[in-house]
Image 1 (tube, chains in turn blue, green):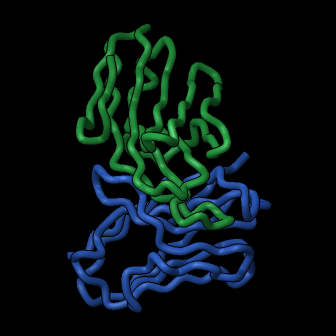
Image 2: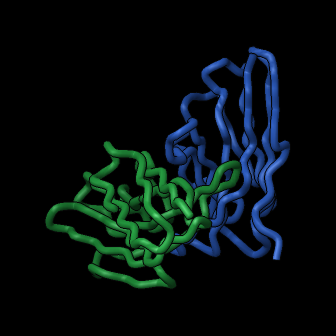
Length: 114
Length: 114
């Protein structure tokens, strides 16, 4: 079956621009996670949704970062007024439900801020 | 071959050897641990997990060992194959949340030579 998909796969943007990264989880998965992964490092937690409810956003670096999942399926991570330090791989993962820890990761969006 | 902790991030073995990848964790309250495999250009892929009420769990060619006394986790891969070459991450549910808010380690690069 289809796995987690993310778009775009690559995004190059100029400093100060806003970007929106999309995640389409595995069908039927109610839990959705956003992570950021620096080169050579493990993913770093950003935020978590259970259905449409954002239950944990403790990992978002600052208020330029926001995420939504309005219908409990597709999620969007938005970064406003991008800065060069925002350049990274942004990964989305989904799992069957709360308490089901096995997370399935998407291919990621490589964001480069110039 | 054996990797002694994440401060030695590379492990090189011959095809057919057994591999052991080690991980030290710091939070004694962590109750769930998971190993991921990440191939170049792909998202992390679930390998095996273990809860803190267990000290060993076996999968297909892989075994995870948990030593809570010394806060140590290891992944053993039997009869390592070239297709096992990847970066391996351990992760823990350090916050003790009921959902999968995972904290990832740095990773170990496994290279398998034919």
